[in-house]
Image 1 (cartoon, helix red, strand yellow):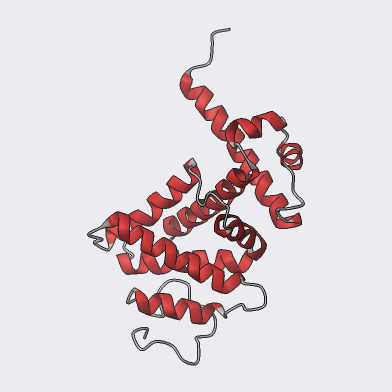
Image 2 (image 1 turned 45 degrees about the horizontal axis):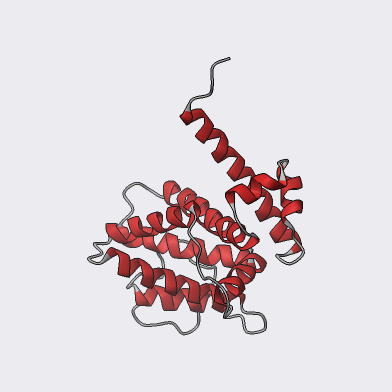
Length: 210
């Protein structure tokens, strides 16, 4: 039997990584970060515990990759489903709405993610392919709007979305998503009717969002 080509090997590795990320997402949503071990994830993924460590040197790395992968895939699906003639502003509106909806649907996962990257002794964001893919899709949305400093505008959008997510998932002090959405839409000059607006608009919202 001839050896597998590099392309085939890469495809197999990617499938393995995706199985691990899916298993991690399912377990983290079900039982939380602290109660989930790498051994649990390996069992759920049907793979060896050592293979997870090969791809991800720590549970923190795996959690960040899991969240970024979930965000990337859901954003990619959302943006591919909207009309091809959607304006750059409409694409940004759909992007914001998808992120806000993810926070509403998966608060436990986002709480764990934020607590890890914000604690004093944390390393912050770690480099992994999923984070790069997420960054690229956000930068594409901004580039279509004519961003002149793509790196900086991406950093600002990422910070704005992170702040919005904190407002949604902060235990005991959750802000209704429609108010957070109104603030973000006003900041970027987006009309309230763009994207996937909530069923009810806030009673008071910035005048820029009409």
